[in-house]
Length: 365
Ligand code: GLY
Image 1 (cartoon, rainbow, N blue to C red):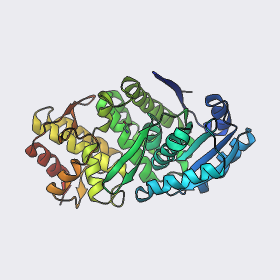
Image 2: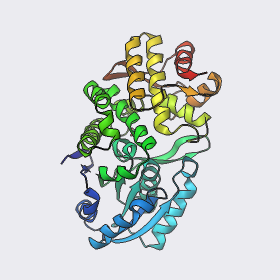
Image 3: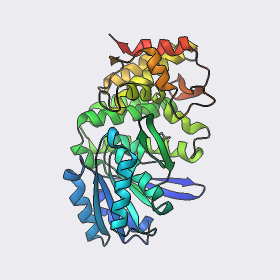
Image 4: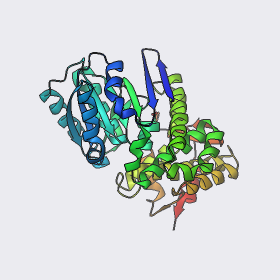
């Protein structure tokens, strides 16, 4: 079964992708952090009823003393307040530096618990066990952690690489299909930035993936983790090419921020629309032809994601939200734009006409 290594300059870890992998979680914890005979398992309120008890039991039976913390699963509660509650639980359970935090949840759980682990006692190890497709192929790998503030998404955070990542595709059986589709937005993104064969493979295998065919899920997750891992290893701190992973995200964050985080569009849905917007911006700029945007529209629609949005805010409001993006440098919005399926470039001088063309292309009604 695939086991993908990330060999960073100061830290190496593995991402395990295997059906049933969570049954052996105690062994993974001990292998990655030999001193971790105690952990706090941080799970979210959506996942806890399905998998919390089973995973806590697997850890206990494997000889790892386990306390469980349950956090809310909403962008509104992805805050420093939730992190503070986790610090209290870590302290109550006398969590030490040689112990570990284990996450069991979606991207919000990975980000919030990862940030709490990265800052508690100036950093305790974290083992990420993502339970959504989006978290498996993106949030759990690469060490980005953080929380939202009213001014924007993920504006407070830290790099804290995990000690290990465990992706067990069987947990996707309890994931709502809408969330599975959202994960596919990030997978299509990986195809656009690096791998045209993956981009086409997702379209050709959409039915098997959405039908939770185990072999298709393992291949999907492993191929996407490999792309993410390669990008992170090449540029851990986002000095350059890691920014390619933000393809579609500057537009997506503006959609989410102006629609009040996660209330109308889920992140993956905003990313799907954002990728189309970025392609249309690139087209207006002369970086690619219309076929690139057309293929992205066809691919997102093939997996049941939106290619346009109802009731998007006015251009001026969206532009202001884009200017709050973390990637803004010297006041210039940096956009990741495709030149073809499989290749993107970063531009920091898109003009108003190019951005307006992008928003016009994804505005419905
Ligand atoms: N999710 C984008 C990154 O990890 O850089």
